[in-house]
Image (cartoon, rainbow, N blue to C red; front, side, top):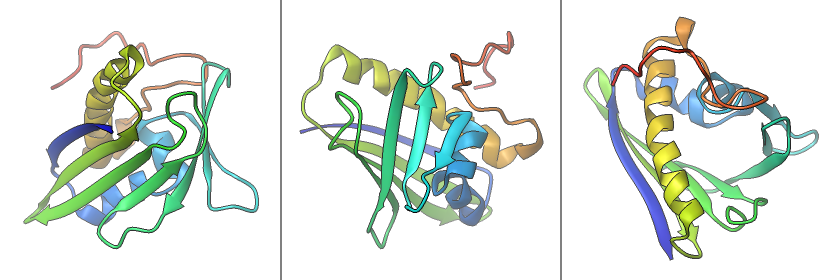
Length: 150
């Protein structure tokens, strides 16, 4: 099975990053503006492009990481999103994986590119919370006009 992987060092404590990758509120700071906790469930629902695309993530047990099982999405269903955090002094090394893809399709390749960008959005949210914005707005993608600072 195919996997997407990225690694990045973030100048923030692991607890701050963990809060950003373990809840709808955290996801809404860097990933998707339309991130909500599912009623009566530990699941998170992410809406994209005015909810024409929806992903439902459910926490999955993993003692060494924050792991989410993807329940929906044509190619995402059955995949898992994993955030492993390793404190390194006053910084944190994040090892990200989106695992268990059935195949390396064109959509898989596109998602790899987007996840790379999202890792820098996560870094920005952890290091500069007051100015952080999610990459995906409710209707599309952010268009700040500014060049990425990475």
